[in-house]
Length: 61
Image (cartoon, rainbow, N blue to C red; front, side, top):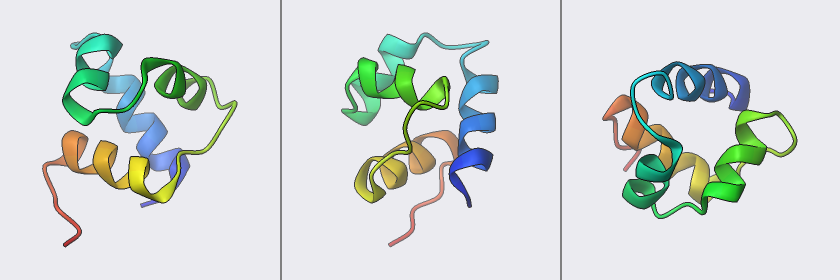
């Protein structure tokens, strides 16, 4: 999955859940999630994996 694909899924999920809640569940700072959502940064591989697992329910391990 690419950063753009994950960003699209994340934005869709934000219609149902709060960014603060997703940050708490993934242990990713909400300022990082906000910058990612607004296409200002790409996530680190570790954060990408955490968010991808949370959004898709798939583990890469």
